[in-house]
Length: 403
Image (tube, rainbow, N blue to C red; front, side, top):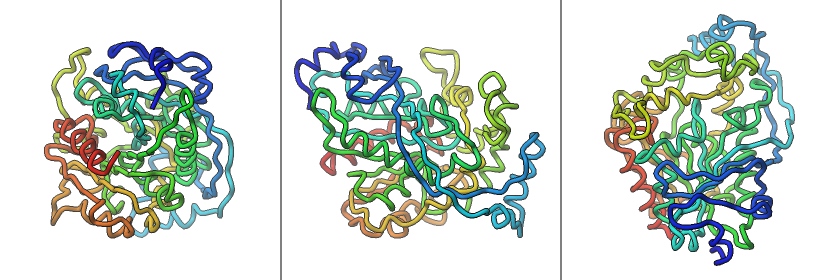
């Protein structure tokens, strides 16, 4: 909980979060600026954190990337029947380490009464091709707003190689192994960080898609990092992901959108176009116009597409191992029309979400585990028609388990 003197700095219910420089330094933020969440239920500050991380990455021996043609050849061969590119690309392992700039948004409830009682923070890890704004799209499509209304703080961040965070080597450095260590570093930061002398009692990990894969990886390696886990847009198998990667029609970011990504190495990729993104969710995107822009929710997500890397494509399965020692609450939330993990029908031949706990979280008691197959929803849960139902379920799950 936060003191009256500190709460006074935050202003009234609808006010913007204004932290004094010393409080920002206590948080570790650099270049920080305040703003309101999409629906103004949260007061937020955006800034950079310096996260030290070290990981054992794979040395990937890929052919030189000099054109889109080269990149497409690698993708084609990766998913060719009988392909040996995975074996041929393995050049051993190496330790990578550094202090990385991770940009994120820290948000607290705008309601002073709720803000004064905050004890739980959610660390939000987005999926491939997205960035941190996925968690705060627009009024009615904001996980951040819903969490703040329920009395939770959130920290949504740009993963390494995305958005306003650092963009190191996209093949040898931006791999799943290092990203697991960065998520571990963020959990450690918020476990030990204090605002005005007060810290967070509970840390909840909320992942989306690849962010959920990273969350499983952290739970396996560091089972004490998180008090609760919510995995969204996820099941226990990645065997369908090749169809998704091909449907994305991966494009070299620097060539696809040179105004945004022109300075990035060719190992950084983006989804090629709007069709590539629509393939995810079989009509579940909400096509109504947003209130503050002529764009629809779907168009908003197309506009905000962001980068991913060859390093992530080649290593994402390497961190998806059973979290045998994690025993906290577990919630699995996926849209029924999710394509990447269920080929568009997560209820066929039965509910695919129920397989996550026994295969990946065997130590979690049945009483601590729930699944929610969201109706009228696909892979981009926060941007789909039943987004509000998803938010309500997650908040009720957390409250039920004492957060």
